[in-house]
Image (cartoon, rainbow, N blue to C red; front, side):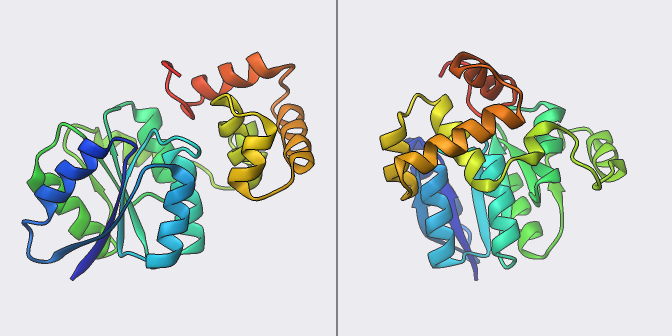
Length: 216
């Protein structure tokens, strides 16, 4: 039995995915989550074989969740389920450990195939995504950081996204279970490492980097 956690900030999407995937006799949906931070907590507790994860998650992006999950919980494979078919997003997901990338317009059979492939330790890309994407990903050097974002720690990335979403220090501190002063230190480190001048720069960077959607 392949145990699965569904992570999407829209309840109707999670309900639809659950209804579709539960028709497969070898799938068991063991949990659902609505935010990036909640996803990390649930994966730590349930340790599913596969995490089906939306790319744009509140509090912590799907890419960052992928990076942390695949680094900390080797038994859990991640499938990104996204409405974005940009090669840049696909490459970023793969570079951070995703086992597959499936578009939300895909059918149940395709998502099921991706989940089974991930559970078997294989990579899966939906047919709409160019094979060149995988080739370019595998040819990239994994030595020095490709951009300044790679110099940020996991906690700094969390503070970056929550700040970009408009959360004040006290709210961030509560969600991350750290002090407000520590939040300020992390935010200062983020702006310094990314060479940003103010909060507006931080928000623009987060949008450009695909950490938060443009409409936020």
